[in-house]
Length: 562
Image (cartoon, rainbow, N blue to C red; front, side, top):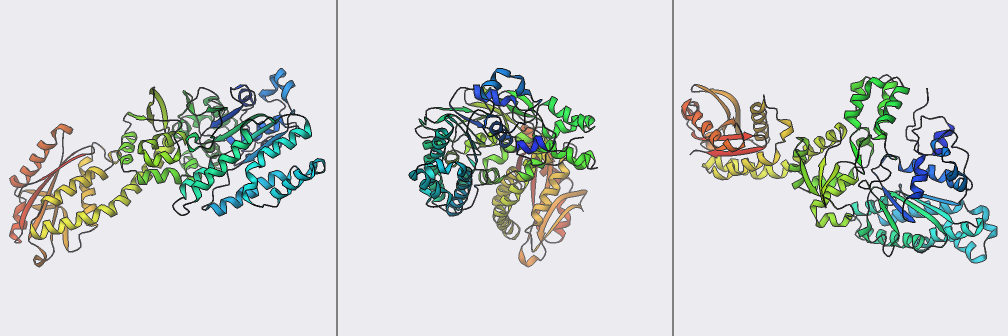
């Protein structure tokens, strides 16, 4: 039984150490034959981009090792004859450039490129004095401006050395841009400086470079509008919306079944499908998250049960900061996410080429972000209109957790106003503002997916009681208290008459549908009178204010009778 490739991104290690490998080698030929000398491929994080890029490097590189025996690409004999181990290849990854300041990011960039340059030291004796000095400047980590021409310089000296054009592979090119965007409030110059550096670096290496055979860049986001590719008219974009390479990143249904079968877990296919399947690339449905599938199998063969092994592996290890920021700072998202979690159809605008900067100016741009990053599926309906939906249970669990945290955060800000209005209602009888704020609070904070049909009223009562208990120092808050000929749902009144003389009695009703909310409120208010709920509190000397609360799903209507 083969070892599982937990966190393995080296193709050589994958093959030589006999890890279980899902053969994606046909990507080598497909990527070569795609239109465009400069090819940009975007896919979500941890869907195999780095491993695939390293595989491409090993195949084409003059210094590559013989790692492809019995793999699918070797059946393409004419292609192999023309291209196998036939080019100088440069492979650089920016996936570790995610520091919190421009100063630290510069240092990481210098280290990354300097290490790349060290691999050319074997030909340093063949360089003239000017080239040797430039190479030494890079290796010695001098001024950051020297690095803007580093990749173009490297393509030239390798091409001259081997008398062949060079293949340039740039992995996770957008990670530095995302980090700069995330931390620009802490370091105001960070974003501007990073954009300028990456634009100069890529333009120098990719625009009209006579030493370049072709280049492939990978990332999560297509950020052309950031001016990263300013002046480049030869970039071909292959996003998750493009009808190309749909199955080369992530696992297909057949590949997952064979993986499970290898470890005698084929009976688990249905639960694995529910949790980790569901991605759509280029219109092809049913792509699995490879990271989560591998970790699931790892835990299962380690002795964990199915239930113990069904965990949000990708969410817990992937960088969610940018996504979380958008969820927590875009209030309109909460209702929309509730709709998605309720399996309602949602049609939204998506621009596959939207920049990170534009999301700040256009909140609806967050849908593009979520789709590109793998947190939503998007199926084109017409032009820029897409149907979006949650891929699987792993992502659903993430949203439920984040939405509830969003509600908790929002609650802290809303609670002060609500409790202030409660003071006015219970002490002075000024109920209108309290009722208005209570309705707004319930409407914006209750999550439909937490409310079942059979026990909806109980959930609402518990929510109202818990919410009011958070800030009712000096008040009694009671539920299901006997009074008159029944039990009042929620009662709030001052503990000491010196602090107020009003008792608020709340009755909750679930409407038959959202068009009958007003009728349900009338029924609630009528029940307070008919069953004489006021009696207990009037005997205590309080003036009673009946409040009716009607609901249907997330729709809420609150009214008082005073």
